[in-house]
Length: 371
Image (cartoon, rainbow, N blue to C red):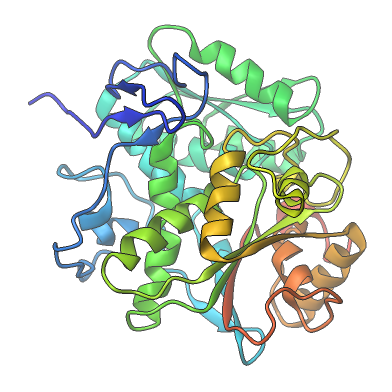
């Protein structure tokens, strides 16, 4: 039987394409794809007992049938930081970050389509996730990274068998190099930004929270935002659960002060974000000067009644050190949300709302806490 996954749909101009034959972006406008897929809210959502992976949410995922690849991802715990704020420990994922949620979905799609090789671009965590899951799936993987990417992260990619291509310049340069490689026949571009299957993997972050809280969600979800893959996945899950009668939370995005195009656009009331200069920051994982899904991110945050805030590197250092003193050792980017909403934050956007934030990226690849 020929595999026929849900089709791609361009959110800008309505262009449609079949997944098996489509280019990695919309051929009309060059933008990212959405997926023509809406789970039926009348289908009972009963997580599969005994399935210790995100595939337990099969009824709302766009890859039915077959036995999917897995490394036991998902089902990460919640721990309290304050009486009203909890952290979800996604550094307990197989490759230490939430990117595993999207990577397993996208690599499973690639496995079913059968390309000659998979290419990806990353500043670290996504590349490691794709390398690991491609290894699991038996697929050849090539990851393009910007110069200056942590050697510990590139070593992990190579350890999983991926070919690592270091590209002169910043994050956008690496993305351009990967897209050029993706325009060759037989190549699958595992883009965590342009391919919507990744977002349908990251949405399981919210389904796990919903399950853990007994069928409800907190009043706010605080999420670090660069390309917005976790926030947009969260928005998908919130919309799907809302159709089942679950009260939606506010989405609060957090950006690094040094590279914050989305926060600037949100504050200005703009529908889209203007590109900004790439400047150094400890939060390299969210330092994206021109996020391709900016319009969707801004719309999702506004629809939820949330906001987008920034944190300085000084606050990142302090928040990371504070988390370490609480027994939670994470990379600098992961401390961004705590820097924004901890009791020490001078501009806490939460107020008295209950909230959950993710912690991912164990400290090993990023140096000692407080650096």
